[in-house]
Amino acid sequence: MKITVVGAGAVGATTADNIIRRELAEEVVLLDIKEGVSEGKALDMYQTAALLGFNTKPVGSTNDYEKTKGSDVVVITSGLPRKPGMTREELIGINAGIVKGVTENILKYSPKAIIIVVSNPMDTMTYLALKESGIPKKRLIGMGGALDSARFKTYLALEMDVSPLDIHGMVIGGHGDTTMIPLTRLATYNGIPVSRFISPEKLEKVAADTMVGGATLTKLIGTSAWYAPGAATLLLVESIVRNQKRIVPCSVSLNGEYGQKDICMGVPVVLGRSGWEKIINIRLSDQEKAAFEKSAEAVRSMNAALNL
Ligand code: NAI
Picture 1 (cartoon, rainbow, N blue to C red):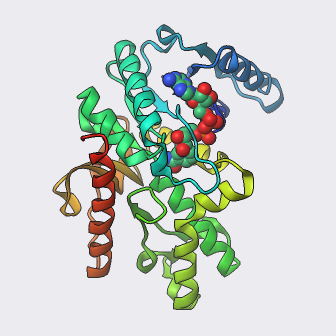
Picture 2 (tube, rainbow, N blue to C red):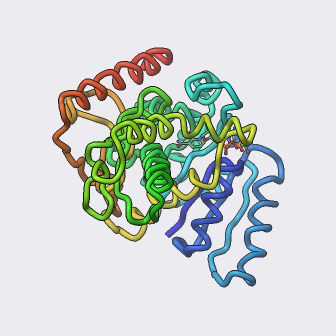
């Protein structure tokens, strides 16, 4: 198993670090355009092997795609992150060029790779990569819902003063402050609806906090977050590499599912060795359906900015 992470910035490096600690591959390549950064971070990470006890060796590469040759899974995190006050959508112009170029280079050396897109605005970047590459849709996956769902579960756990491990919940729809849909109706505390434990007002506040979860962190830190994004990306990589068949909300190409087509948006999918294997169809309430449609409209108008 060989995994490449493109972009050795905050999210890319954290993702690669998580992957090597879990020994998910024999080889992990970390590639960045900035001279020396990926080599330096890879060496720094490898120096933790003797301390933490793992055997996977990370390899850095300054834009040399030959080193990524034969990768089974590729994670694309290259691109600008947002600064306080910015939306993910404002990154579109510059990141579109980066994601397009990176996807082309990756496929030259790893035509069979499963590609996970993290760069924002993620739903549009995933659709762009799909359109530009022409690879089978099941091999292109956008990471967003895994992170938003983790934030949702964390805010619920904080509100209820319980362990996040006992909370189940999902966020679907577009990966944007106003487009994501925390499914409060279906969230449970060990199988029991959370509405039994918190008031409707508090549940609504949890959903609202979840939606601006990324912006809240960007404001506090001064740039966008990386620990949870890196862990959420690991969840996707691990389910694929170990063929775990986990159900994770991911941005995938819809063809009539959830009433949408010609778009990538967050829906629950089963992740296994061949990529996303199937979409899980949840029966949405009328209100949730309307929110999904509104979310699709927003993602579509973002795609239109790139003539997609
Ligand atoms: P960062 O600025 O720390 O790292 C980005 C890296 O990409 C830099 O090291 C830069 O040199 C590199 N890069 C730029 N152009 C490149 C190219 N053509 N080829 C190779 N490398 C290139 O940014 P950070 O915080 O790691 O975020 C990365 C992206 O991920 C951003 O677009 C951010 O908005 C997005 N993001 C998405 C999340 C999601 O849930 N989908 C969560 C968090 C961040």
